[in-house]
Image 1: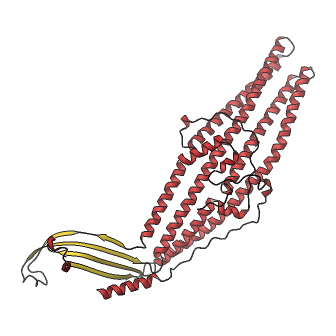
Image 2 (image 1 turned 45 degrees about the vertical axis):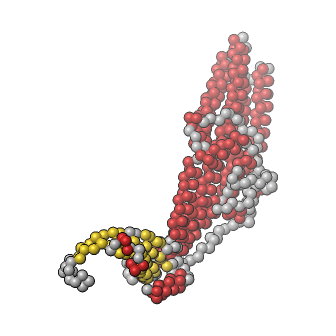
Image 3 (image 1 turned 30 degrees about the horizontal axis):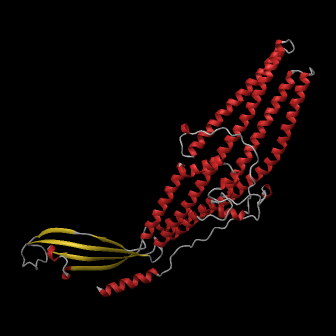
Length: 473
């Protein structure tokens, strides 16, 4: 027994020191341009460093800060992602356990009667026998990881856990960005509604003046109807904005983990310009973006799974053992002479499987190639998203300046048209056209302002959220 144990353990140690089959993980190569084409759209260094956990503070909005905090703590999508991380961590612990022996304890008690004419009936003088049998054994099992199957399985489980952790960061970043986008869209809606409310007040006053002029025989009924039509039309536009605002408010409530019925935000028209977002270098995006980190971990998982698939066609070496006590009576069960033990080593090697193992390797290789392609696609998409938002910010900045000039020109046009109408040089239709033009340009200016805030938020998301160091996966 001792000699067998020594031989088995020596074989196990020798087998465990063998090299694992299968490829080793290598970081995927990806095209990295030296700079962003649109990097001049944001002035690097103009904004203070912002951490990944609170990137929204760059907008300096206390209401937004509170909403982001609520979403991080109560959003259901984030909770689902956290549960997936916990599940993956448990899978790692389960895979790690395969590297250690398994020990189980058992107990059994039986009373047996053997027939008189049974084979080998020599111990009882050829007579029938009735006896008790009490056993208390420990069972031992261990798979010798000769070719790395267990190690590759553990690598794959760790890769999945790291991918789920990166996915959690991506989900959290996506929820945070969605809160900010909806919030700034709502504030842009408030800005448009403020413009419409101001215009409605002015149009009511104009309608009163036109009605008084008609009653005094100075203006025609046509001018009254024209003034009232514009007022009604503007009221309808304001009501249409209310529908959009209600939907945005409800969306923010769900993102914050609250019911839409119990959530409301007071009107707060958007003003000012968005902060300048430093894009950094394209190489920084590889380190910042959680979806790129997740794609990289998926490549590592696929690499490990190739090793697992290759070991399926190699011998499996196992050690099994048993040690314990056996006796016909409970009183003598733990006597030394009633101990029992065994140790065995087994090797199982596949001879024919109809091509199943080969197909498993081919399948793992195909998954690996797909993960490489997905990684490269994720990187290219990340660069595209950054360039899109940098271009949007550059173009929207110029558009905002042009639109501001258009609002100023439209304002002067209204003043001129009103003065000429009061002087009797033109009809009231000219005033109405000028006021409609001013209202349209004011609304477009408010929309551009909102688009600039949204583009800034999406740019932060495209950069991976924040620009203070590199987050750990």
